[in-house]
Each structure stands twice: as structure tokens, then as C-alpha cells.
Image 1: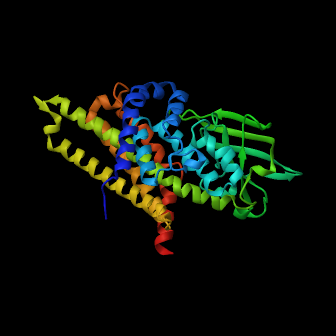
Image 2: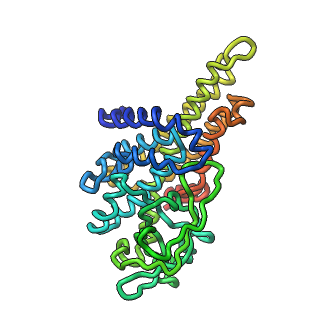
Image 3: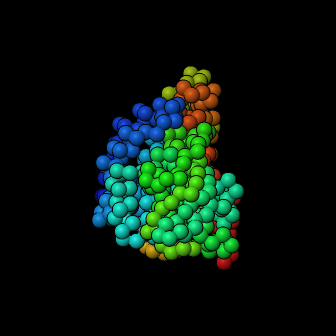
Amino acid sequence: MDFSLSQEQSQIRDMVAEFVDEEVVPRAKEIAETDEFPADLVAEMGELGLMGMPFPEEYGGAGLDYHSYAIGLEEISRGSGGLGTVVAAHTSLAGNMLYEFGDETQKEEYLTTLAEGREVGAFALSEAGAGSDVPSMEATAEKDGDEYVLNGSKLWTSNGSVADTITVFAKTDPDAGRTGISSFVVRPEQDPGFHVENTEEKLGDKGCPTAELRLDDCRIPEDRLIGEEGDGFVQALKTLNGGRITIAARGVGIACAAFEAAREYAQQREQFDRPISDFQTIQHKLADMDTKIQAAKMLMHKAADKKIRGERYVKEAAQAKLYASEVSREVANEGIQIHGGYGYTKEFPAERFYRDAKLNEIYEGTSEVLRNTIADQLLD
């Protein structure tokens, strides 16, 4: 078993790290304060091939394996948790829905522009009464001639207010439960009846707009149906399963940023005439932080490896996302503690890392749901 990075993976890591250090890190505080979507940085990432890392070159992607994609997203998230979510929602959710389940025409028309970074994608699944309980959704899609008419509302849609292509889930058969859910491509600028109701003011994840969407008799052509009617629930589960690897990467990236900031501060901050890094209590905190990060990375890459091999990876993805999410919050919390009073102020980035880390335990499967998923796999 080889734990070293290939030459290509090392090059990807170094290239993304250089971009993050030069372009993202200097802007991170500004993004966190203004909560504005950094369209210029997203455009730059598109030019670098970072908006379509795992997709084949024939569809405008970079053709990278999932290890490289996770490494790239880890570095982006190290610079900005919000920017990490922008890329994850765009690529792992919206883009991957089209890549895995779209027909050739849909891939050429919609996936290519997403993978090239010329457009932004979003994934609209959750509703006010349907978060973890997806089959409880109330949005509907009725066939009318050669069109579908969509009605309903969606919540928690990352990139929702800035997206050019959104994969939307709605019930084509309201009485069929999970087998009555279908998915569609919605183009906000083209489709009448699409509205952005609101964008949330969040604890963290700044720079990634989280939107509430409304569909009022939103008419779309029938060829925007992804797959067949009734396929939506299974499509969503499979897409979220792959997405959990990238949320693990986001968690690892934030944890790395929190750890590096804490280590640097501990070596500079003096108390009792010596750096606080000389005290065993601080040393143990740093040792535990790094150990947890390394373990989270291993789980992330184990899930990525099984995905690449085409093996079942439901348990591995859930474990990677669960552990990395909790580690990111724990490491960020210890980072604040090492900074002491300064960690509680916005003068230092420690508090931002904590706010960004918390989201990992909630979206794309809460920690509670993931524990159920892992147990189901163990007992199946």
C-alpha cells in the first residue's frame, strides 16, 4: 500500500497551494466580512481547471482522479471555507449529477460550461420540511405537453443565487414516495417562474451564497429531465455519497489552516519569559490536532480510492465525512484555546476557522444521519 503522492498529485497540490496562498488567503478576511461571492476568484479557478477537476477533458474537465480532486479542494478550503463550498457544490453536486446521470446532449450543453468554469452550478434538494427526510419534499413537476411545470420552494441551496445551471428535485408522482422524485436542469436566466427569494445570513461559510429558491409555474423543456421519471431519489443519494468525500476534504483543509495558525502563534506568543509552545499542555494540544488531521486524511483517501476502483464506498464516505467534520471543529476549537483571548477576537483568523468548520457537521448528511448510515452498513 503506497501512501505517497504521485508526481501529478504533488504538482496539483503545489499549484493549488500557490494559488491559494497568493490569491485566496490575502482575501479571506475580506470575504468573511463582506460575505460577497468572489466571482473573480471563481473565474481564476476556472482558468486553472479547478472548477472541473474530476471530469473528463472531453467535457471541459481536468481529467483528474478523485485523490487529486480531494487534495485540490483541501487546499482551496484551507484558504477559505466558503470558497471550498462553492467548488464542492458546483462540482461534486451539480456537475456530478450531470456527469453521472445526464444524457450526452445534457453533458455537452450544461456540464462542459460548468467544468470549464464559465458557469456556476448548484444543487437544489432540501426544503423547509424536507432536510434529512428527502421523500417529504413538496415541490412538484407536472408534464404539460413537451414541457414540465415546476412549483415549490427550495432551501439551503449553495450557490443558488449565482448559479447558471441548477439541478432541481421535484415530485413527478406525489403519491409514490421516494420513487416519485425526479430531477431536472433549471436555467435561472432562461426559465420564467424561477425566483431567488432570499440568501441566508450564516454563522460561517462566507462568500458562498446559500439561497432560498421559489418555482412558480416554472416551465422547462422536457429534455431537461435528468434520467427517467422516478430516478431522482437514487440519483441524489449517489451524488451526496460522492460529495461526502469532498466535504471531508473541506474539513481537512479548514483543520490544517487552524492547526498551522495555532502552531505559529504558539511559537511566537510568550508567557513566563518563554514561548507557550514550550509548555507540555500546548505541545499535547498540537500533537492531538495533527494526529486527528492525519487520520481524517487517511479516511478521505480510503473512500476516494474505493470510488476510483468502482467499489461500494457508502460506509467509507460516511466515515470520512463524519470524522473529518468533527475533527475540523475540534481542531478549530483548540486553535481558539491556544490563541487565548485573541482567539475570540476577529483580529486573528482562529474564530473564522471555527465558524467555517461547524457547517461540515450539518450539510450533505448531518453527523447523526451519517452514524445511522454507518451502522446500517455494518449491520446489513
